Amino acid sequence: MTPKGAEIATFEQIAIYLPIKEALFAIAPFVKYMVSNVCDVLAALVCQVHARTLLLISKPNDEGGSHRLGASTAPHTLEVYLDYCPFSAKIYKALRTQVLPWIEKDHPNQIQFIFRHQVQPWHASSTLVHEASLVVEKLSHEDFLTFSDQLFAHQQDYFDEAVENKTRRQLVEQVAELIVKTTRATDKDVIIKALANGTNAPENKGNSVTNDLKLQIRLARQNSIHVSPTVVWNGLRDDSVSSGWDLGQWQEYIKSKL
Image (cartoon, rainbow, N blue to C red):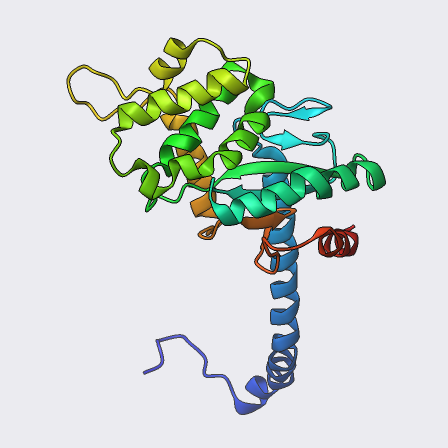
């Protein structure tokens, strides 16, 4: 029923709008395509900004350090999510001994490498060794990657079978000894205290680096990281990268990105 006072549009009046409607339907797929592409570009830009600004834990400086190697002003980021496990050890060794020196020589100030923590909780000691590396970062900033070298070199000491009959306290003392021997953090009691979960009434508060590790895990979950290692180039995860790549494959990959 037509409301009182309202006019009923004639067919002729409606017809003049039909070409406009048809035109809108015709360009709708193009508009949808353009909007989709704009969203993709914006998402990529956001990811790059995210990668440049979320240098969690590390203290930037021109020479790099802590969780990062390379200048903080480098336009490209190579983030690698690592556990202290065999496959991560392969990619880490290749990067540290071959790829990063080549980048520094042939592409100076172009790429910054960022170490990201990827705890694998089904391995009993994974959380602890990551916590130990973060304690080193706090006590002796420049020694983080050096200590990571040592953790990879001694990784079998923390494999499931090796720790089966050890308590957490025994493992804390074991890794504290490794820290004392291989870094400038030489006060074992301070290290143990930093890694200890407390001895008072149960409150489940964690230790001195629990919140730092939470941030790293949160970042990994946000980026849907599961496998270690996983490479993120300029903020975008790239599952095509393999832990078994040699220098030549890395060179081809990086040249294609620059």
